[in-house]
Image 1 (cartoon, helix red, strand yellow):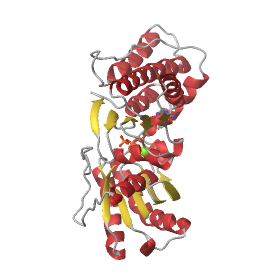
Image 2: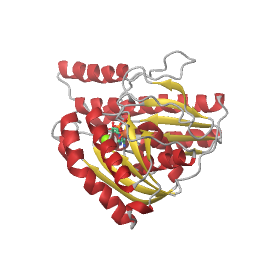
Image 3: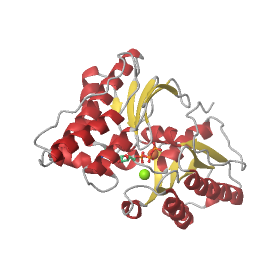
Image 4: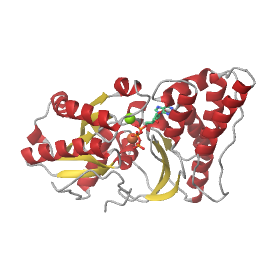
Length: 335
Ligand code: ATP
Ligand code: MG
Ligand code: FE
């Protein structure tokens, strides 16, 4: 089974062909980072314009490098939501046109299901499975009892982890996207500022990162008031260790409580070296299999959308040409 995946929910225009849900045949990502850097973040209007310019080329390139003709495909999978509405619509409309022109079924994929299914490209999922989703817009613990079933057991009450990374990076004067910058500074640091951990209620799997972000801002402000200089390495290291400790501790607790067979991490922040090391160590001690995809499959890509779309295809899920982008799409079961 060959599925082409299309992803345009944020600022990456991407297309990919995946075979049998677990083998990447081609994977094309046109990033807008250079353009968005000038504005210090994603400007929706500009993102849409880039998608329009890139989408046809990106899909064509994915097919050419896969060495496949459109008619040799079995279905088109596209990110239906959540994301920026103008950005989603470009991908959805391109997918509808492509599906219609080639007589292929279309499947609407939830972007976060895509992030989770990036893991299927590396090793088969084992259920019950716990997914720690840490991305630019989401921070969630999701329990999966089978393919296509998603139970939310905890989520952020304010900022997402990636959002916190990007905001703190901005405070430190680092370029967009801030996650990789803070990751690098933290890894190089020879000291750590002690920032608070947001544990919330002891029985809660929810997260909160806005208090931590405020602590960083206050810390910087207070030092500057006293005419002292901020050490960005120490701040980055302190911020990161607070984020990583809370994420790891709650993921371990949830994995124990639900007796899962496998834990996976997903989303852009799962590219973080400190988080990867901490989760690997913690689940190594727990003797629970833990996996995280290679960095290029953690950040936005279309292979993950094709992977989720393949599992949906096998389950008989089909969309229609009446599909539209759903900016606030919930992560429901696809069954
Ligand atoms: P969502 O998936 O929730 O819709 P998104 O698609 O914009 O949001 P992703 O592409 O999954 O988000 O992830 C981007 C985020 O990951 C950004 O906030 C970025 O700073 C963060 N990120 C990328 N690499 C790292 C890293 N090494 N360390 C920490 N954060 C990182
Ligand atoms: Mg992005
Ligand atoms: Fe994403």
